[in-house]
Amino acid sequence: MGRLRSVCVYCGSGFGGDPAFADAARRLGTALAGAGVKLVYGGGNVGLMGTVASATLEAGGYVTGIIPDFLKSRERMLDEVQETIVVSDMHTRKRLMFDRADAFVALPGGIGTLEELVEQLTWAQLGQHRKPILLLSVNGFWDPLITLIDHMRAHGFIREGLDLNYLVGEDPDRVVETLAEVLARVEPAPLADELIEQRF
Image 1 (tube, helix red, strand yellow):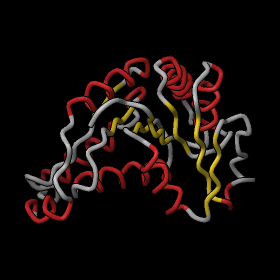
Image 2 (spheres, helix red, strand yellow; image 1 turned 120 degrees about the vertical axis):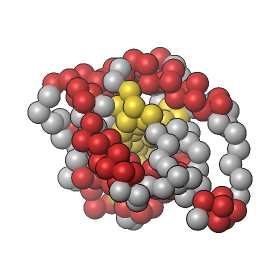
Image 3 (cartoon, helix red, strand yellow; image 1 turned 30 degrees about the vertical axis):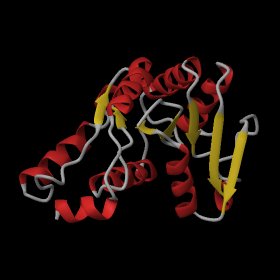
Image 4 (spheres, one colour; image 1 turned 90 degrees about the horizontal axis):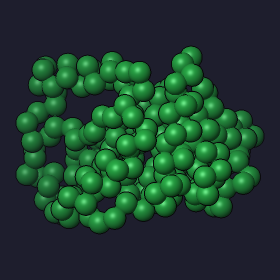
């Protein structure tokens, strides 16, 4: 597919109970900026969202925040970012985040983070994209989800030919390198309709 230019980061609007989560967010933001990779994120200035964006900016990186109008006051937009896009609803937000990103990283987070991550896994499973998806499993945060996916597979709900394609990492300093290597090997996808028909 080519060069890694931008990464969409999904993460919590809170900090969680482990200081390692915020540390990973800071390190990831710093690494993105150091590699000249743009950050695309949910636009807020709170929790891990604000941490990864602030770290990217402090290290001289470029940040695009995409936030729905109704969350502007609740998640307090980060005014310092180079580009803020205010949209009408969550669906538009998620679509724009997808369009602006070459790859996706899921830091620890709650239901919203999980929903965004699973949507990208689903779109990839159905042949809608081949952008790399990486679960940054800080201190094993995403282990229960990985176990659930294995459980679904064991019960036949994730079938051969429709498997999920994702990466798991624990070191935020290696995320950019990992995504860039994977992205460089990705071949252009066939037409989505043809791919879905083959898989079903």
